[in-house]
Image (cartoon, rainbow, N blue to C red; front, side, top):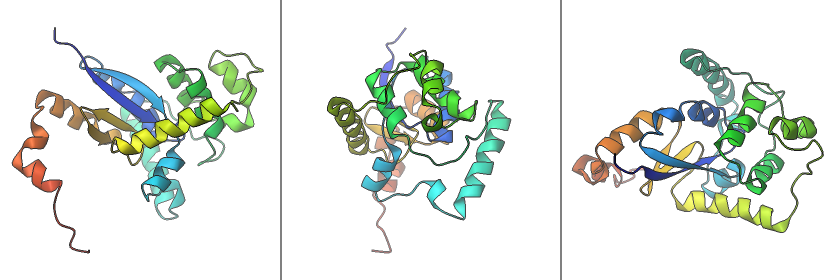
Length: 208
């Protein structure tokens, strides 16, 4: 059996698409050794001159309803939290501090997207849900803060501009709908050197 390929999964628990992605990650795990890395989506969006769908008035209801439909189609439990978007700085720092493995990462997503809760409004319950003590404080150490910022900066350097983002062999596969693309790439590792893909990455911008 060939060795698994190392991959990095950048996530923020604010993203319903990241939640729906990790619920399907078993499709990739026979070929990839995936490390989950928490980032701040807001910071990444600002760094890449991007906006989340929750910030675009016309796009917001369409995107949210699409998530409901997608979850139904995939048979994945899904429920929106009390409000969205919301601040994820404290929970993302906690996941950094705890060096969260996949089990804890899934729990964090499920607290929001299955239980329908905002961790900021129920911090003690969130911590208990993750298997931590109810009196676990919100992380404030400079080291944790800097680590989360460093993760976010690295995500940008790796080519990510949103979440979910999977990095494989320096290629960024962004979005829930790129799981099949990732599998095709793993079966055809020279894909991005093919003429059509190489040209697509360098098509001149006619608006500049």
